[in-house]
Amino acid sequence: MNNFLNDTTKFVNKALKLIPISKGLAEKIITCNSTYTVRFGVRLRGDIHTFEGWRSVHSEHMEPTKGGIRFDLDTHAEEVEALAALMSYKNAIINVPFGGSKGGLKINPNDWEDFEIEKVTRRFAQELIKRDLISPSQNVPAPDIGSSSREMAWIADEYRKIHPTDINAAGCVTGKPANKNGLEGREEATGRGVQYIVREFFRNEDLLKMVGFTSSMSDKTFIIQGLGNVGYHASKFISEDNQVRLIGIAEYNGAIFNQEGLDVEHAKKFFTKHGSFEKYSKGTFIKDPSLLLKKECDILIPAARENVITEKNADDIKAKLIVEAANGPISYKGHSILNRKKVFVIPDILANSGGVAVSYFEWVKNLQHIRFGRLEKRKNIIQLSSLIEAIESMTNSPMPEKYKSELLDGVNEIDLVRSGLDDMMIDGFQEVKKEFIQNDKINDFRTAAYKVAIEKIAMSYDSIGL
Image (cartoon, rainbow, N blue to C red; front, side, top):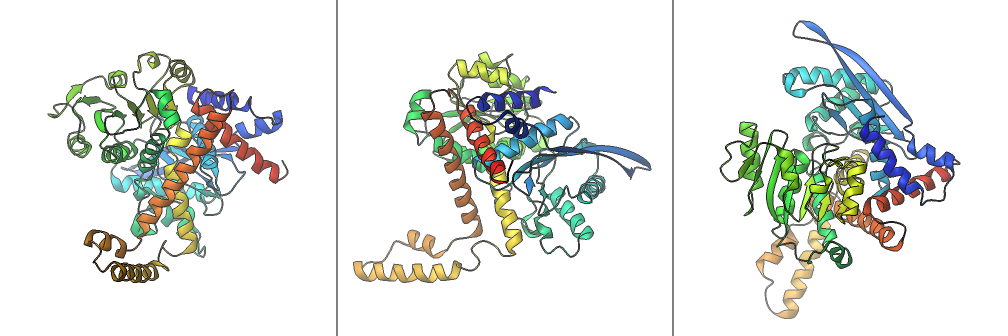
């Protein structure tokens, strides 16, 4: 068992000690239901190239099961199983009615041209679709590391070819482009969810006292590790939210630091163009990106890969709050050290669950075959217009144009998506907080989160007779 899967199991076992369920049910919750391995050939560049991929289903206590597909040369079966387990717990915490699943394809997308990636993706999709490992009713993938809305569109197209009479075919994957039955707000969703979690943390005075924070966010600093989709959006939204200052960005081949603050948009454009932060003029370049994790800051957000904080560097972490935007960025031993140091950690199964929340909305939209807000928007605008007229008549003065235009714009789909996401993240946070505060045997937020998730999964299994 690799470190990531082993550590995930240790976190689960720690929470299970606090839950009065049978040994058999506990084992059922821990164990991955199934992992399918596929090896398929694709003719590229005049030769047959064989690729290896996996799709794991951790828990089918609810269906469909849900989880992304990562395209990564370093992925392997046990990593995919660990990620599938995390999906089960994420869904349970924020009350998304899905089981947990995950996929991986052993490939470096940078080694291939776009049309070659398309051929490989479509072949991989065919192998999974014909075994019902991609299906709107049984197993619904989404983007992950190395994949994007583009790959999801290709997969959806393959599913439609194989099942041309399935009226709900668009719901076989989420994270599709908005113009291909996708949903506005899905691409930003995980980063947006991290923003909402940070914001919610700062609304809780009792937690702030534990960390030694004031309730003001404007005087806080944060460092982001990883500037991919999640890291970029989280940095952007948190920087905009009460002017929290981004002072460091780490990527796989170097980092930048500026105590006065960094512009994430400017930094992202530079990195995209040059492939490195070296010679970036608005921050100090640090050749070893791991050193940035040890810099003084209020909030540290690992948003890249697993096991970046371990027993080897946890003692050197100076942040007071860590928000896990990545999956499994802190090892079990690393977490134990941070816990001993009183560093507050908001775990991955809560902090980065925004992606699956909005994936759920997209799936629901695909099954309903109508965009959110379509039926009621004009009716609401008419009602608000009447209300404005009544207020202006009663006060004998016009409503300021700023407020009037905002009201008469009506509610758009993206507004509803963000509102729903905010609500789910807040509810999940408060459920975990309640467990954390009220249970004297729990001394960290991660254990509280796992306890909340496991109890919900156990209840679901119990209701179906297990």
